[in-house]
Amino acid sequence: MKILVATDGSKYALRAVKYAAKLIGWLRPAAHSITLISVHDNTNLRFANSILGSEDVVAFLHERSKAELKAAMKFLTTTVIEHRSVIRTGHVAQEIVKFASEGKFDLIVLGSKGRSAIVDLLVGSVAQRVLATARQPVVLVK
Image 1 (spheres, rainbow, N blue to C red):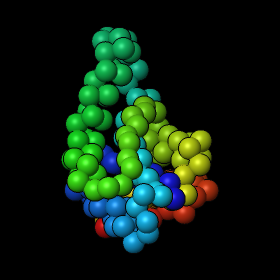
Image 2: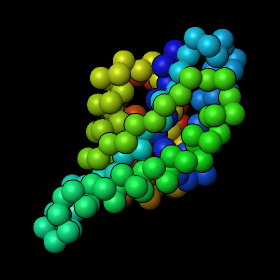
Image 3: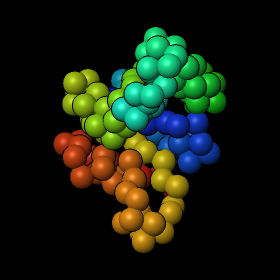
């Protein structure tokens, strides 16, 4: 089983990583893997791109992603589970779903911040967009 776990460095995302590891622990860990993905939205950074240059903006977002992946990668190194990380830029939900499809993942795991339904209805959430568009099963972890 190939599991894709989206992480933003939050405690909710780390819970999702730990849950995915627990799922694999119930199976035979040697036959399964976890891929962490960190995505930053660069679509609204046109102004920053024009002043700083797109290379500097991409480098900044890449460094943020590396920092956000650190705790999850540290946790996974304490397990016997095969794991890796991927950094992308673009529309967050779209990139997660696109990468999951391209990589033929069996499951997507996301941390849920537990906002109220009204707040999510007004502002939306990455989790809702992934749930709505992914072809794979999606697990939300609180």
